Image (cartoon, rainbow, N blue to C red):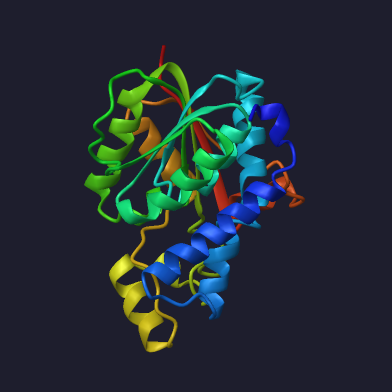
Length: 259
């Protein structure tokens, strides 16, 4: 299929839904609780909604279109966003440390003839050639690298594999939002990952081991890794006043490799 044939993403979303269900059934895990149903929809029915601001930011920064663009999806999970980017014409490589999950995106991409190459790997050390991608996306993935050294290495590696002038877009939970995005508890994301995890466990709301940053800290990390034009940008769909953008639930950051 060509990208023009895939303007209606609904059939692909339904294929993703079936494939995710098959994955969980194969691994003897249930999707019937609240967390499971959220995981299912995040990787199927909600893909278009999740991808829309990323697409708008990517194409609004001089790209214009994803057709023929080499895009790297870092921490791709099941590969649902990789499939969506490929449906818009991009040539997508996705990496994720959990290799078994990649079978979902691989199967759906193959069914629809999409250019998606999903590989196991770590952001901190990628087996990818220098200067090989036009765009890179870290969607809700950099936050899972907790150590500051690990985050620095991940950004250095992203810088390395981008072409000169290549664009990085990051979407992560925002540390400055009043409520923790993983538990709904107020302000615990302001604590260290260790202490936030202990309090959330005591409250009966187990939390992923993550490090959240503020927009200001995110920009600083990008500059330390050698990126230019590092900036916090509001989500294109945001209706919040500009004064409140730094406190949005999720932050969007952009930066370029100099070139």
